[in-house]
Length: 119
Image 1 (tube, helix red, strand yellow):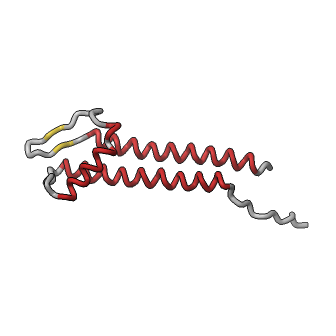
Image 2: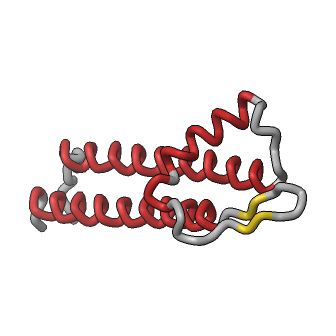
Image 3: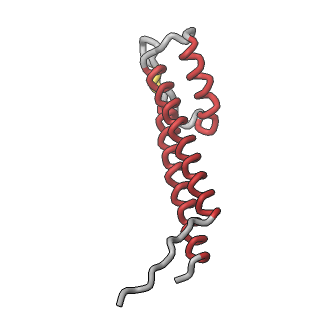
């Protein structure tokens, strides 16, 4: 007396869109954090600003850091190195943004799936 076989549940279009959004948000956060980490260490070790790679990293960082500029003061060392705590804060905030967006998108997708497939 087995139970009747149920057809596999096909994910809804909203659920698929939610998955794509999560991948996009995490992709943006990972790229942003990687660029910020490079900029942090380049400034910390006083990298040569005339090098094209360093210029690219600093240019990219300017865009990503826009909301976080000036939150914390930078500490300059005697040799020209800079400890920029705002960059560390931005890295943390982008990570939290990605986790928060993931949680929100998952919550919306679960609610949609629960309404689409009542038990």
